[in-house]
Length: 443
Image 1 (tube, rainbow, N blue to C red):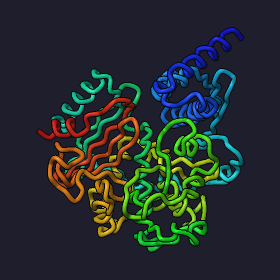
Image 2: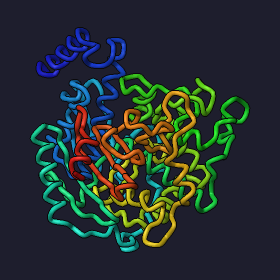
Image 3: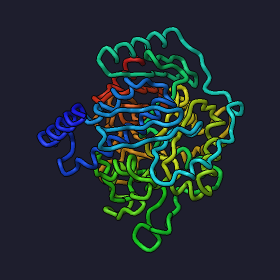
């Protein structure tokens, strides 16, 4: 008991004296405690059951987000992880085979009814491999250099001319370890929309997307503007207790409900604003067009996972059963590389045209915003309309480069002019020299 109250005292004094350091004010302490417990349960569950991480590694990863997370206790059962923060706040998450982990918030029975019908035997061959000794040596050296600098790179992969030529993994990880991509899931949400469009199920020019939007200005928002983050919807992407983003990922039963009911802050198409809420609205729309949670699960596996041979792939659901398209995707380095190669191949995979080539061209074009046009369909572009080197996001790389990006510096970089895909998975709180490392590999 003394230990518990001593920890409470430390936490209270720390929060009261250092709100700026912690990233939130004292008035957010209740929110902070619940977000901490929920984050611990969610990442602890996925880290344990999907990535195979031990408790020490999970707690270290959690502590990188907030000092409060270092006070968490995680308890593991056969299919559940419970998080306890000093006995003040608790949360739990449940693992479902093939589906991944979901926080236990409200009615989760829809999740229990989902059935993963596809079998691994149905998977197509994955990415062709042709490991090169020279490329492998370079990538091994790069991984060692990264981690000597404390960057915590866990997987590096290089695909050149359509073949996996090198892959390097830190101790405790391998080619079959699913790792969290965070916001790289957004790009996969766009790929899912592109596949649906190829099959005539949706169109990027669709408007009046939801009943809740039909009678106000939101009726004019196009699906393409959601994809480009230029919808004008008002959403607080700040990751701090009490904000839209934190509540959506760690508190809400229905992740897309909050952004769905957001007002318009800008005229659609005029202003770029990066928003995880926007992506979850897209996923809600795709879910509805497909016919619900089971239909969406079937579509994902039949139309993307199986054809691409994604053998270690988990796109996780929110407690209502809808995919969290903004953030919760675990996949092996090879699976991430395959997704990048699909884009590099103009949507073609081993002779099957999964994505329309014209759709993919539009997906990698600058958006129409007035403040930052270097973003396509859930993809970060190196260059907007201005192709000059000093206007590029990554000046060391060709103008045609684009990427999936995720928190803690997850990267799938696609460079068409170099016929290259580079994958980096890890846990870097500080900057990661993506462009510098790729440029060094190629020169």
